[in-house]
Length: 311
Image (cartoon, rainbow, N blue to C red; front, side, top):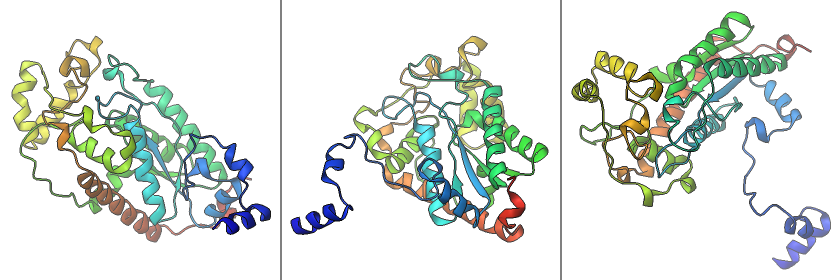
């Protein structure tokens, strides 16, 4: 082995000097079809095979004591990268923060306006259209961005040669939800579901030693509505979410800090989270997304790059 290393060093394949001077914190491996890792010739080559892009729209916001503030960012990015390993699409992250005003009483949360979000993503899409990308899948990885994500989709469809869909919506008909026998307890932001996803998608950033039981305090009328929400009553859920999880200054008393001391919006013990559940949920979404993408390719075949590029 030592002789092999010496030969590689002489050949210039391995440089001991360069290795010893490398940033000790850098452990990232290059990922296929992930824009920040690519060179421009690699993007050019990808454009000869696809005109499709996944753009995650995440957030930088508190996720309880056990999950990182970047949970929504990492979730969207990692799911998009997994999809891009199974079918050729570009993964193009644009921003870290999103729309998170109701988490602002927890340190570290960053929130930006809806107008800022839509402008930045729309202009990013215009840049990618200029290079020859034409089909956009907006992956909403933070529920608070849902409405602005759909607005971005509409702007792309109405104002550019591009075509856009929201990927959660588009993959929905192909999605086969894994069955989890968990009882009837409220479990949303930073709860068992999200913690399980984190254990699978970015395990080194999850600290289960800080997980535990949680208590949610709601205004009385929302508390009475909760059993219907848990049971899947769509009308109750619509009314509930229209009022719950809103900024403190609205006076609705449903900002995260007003409802939970930990920032975990769940009645479950987050120590119940497992990487297996996270894997099942993630793989189901990835598989559904790939099926949608392949069907879209059949419905609309790829045009030659010369017909798509603006230069």
